[in-house]
Amino acid sequence: MEEFAYLDIMAGAPPGPSRWDHNPEGAIHSLDDALAKAGLPGELSPALKVLERVGQLIDAGRAERDRAHAKLEEATRALVAPDGEIDLDAYAAVLRECEPWISDDAAGSTGVGDAARQVRVRAVMTVFGMASGLHQKQRNRCRDVVAVIAGIPDPPADVSQAQTVAAASTLMIRHGREQDWAKFVRLNDQWLAIHAAGRLLRESGQFESELHFNGAPTELGLMYLNWEGAVGKEELRQLPGSLRVRRAHDLGWKPGFVVAVGS
Figure 1 (tube, rainbow, N blue to C red):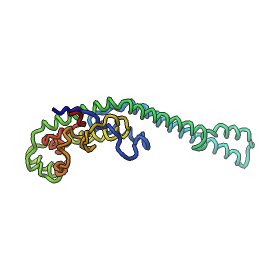
Figure 2: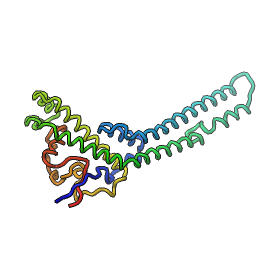
Figure 3: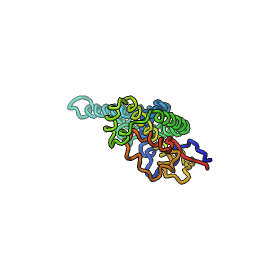
Figure 4: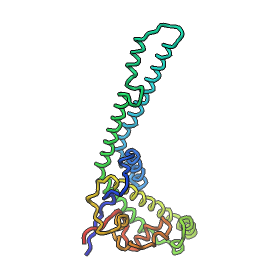
């Protein structure tokens, strides 16, 4: 008898540049947004707390540069004024005070930039350290979402034959099934968000050793426990998006946050 285990949609890094390399702050915020849409809000609070320091450092450095430029401009105006004492010592003192901040490559600006980069790295490492726990929560959340979708009464046949989401929505309303349709839409959105979060975390490369598809195409192996049944099939593409998880369940594909292992 074949043994199945819920493993990791995040296992293995996809080809192409990783968002964690070229835009780590954006990756953290995108992951936080996807997790919230998946029904897991606030999970990245520790990393976001660290990331707040980056903004604080950048704001403080910008304010100091603005202050230095303003002070240097004031000292220069004093030199070029038609009257008044020419105090070069005072001007030199202002230059020394402002020098660390008067350009992007000045020592003060560079130091703040280096500190901000270090904090970004710490924020990313915080996310990576949470990855296993996030995986578990995403896995459980996906299992719950699929269970609720499976428990919604079957949609009428004409709804399943609709060509667009708008047409399916109209038909469900005509059948008095507005609440069921709202559940399909909301839960399908959560399903998609769970997998979007999984793809983003997979780019981190934290789960490469856990990718065990036994020959499954990657996307199918990530989404369906019984991925063999989904190979080469086009049924889902012909359905309105909000009904696809339910149809996959009815077809026995066992949708989830899964890969198949063992035999």
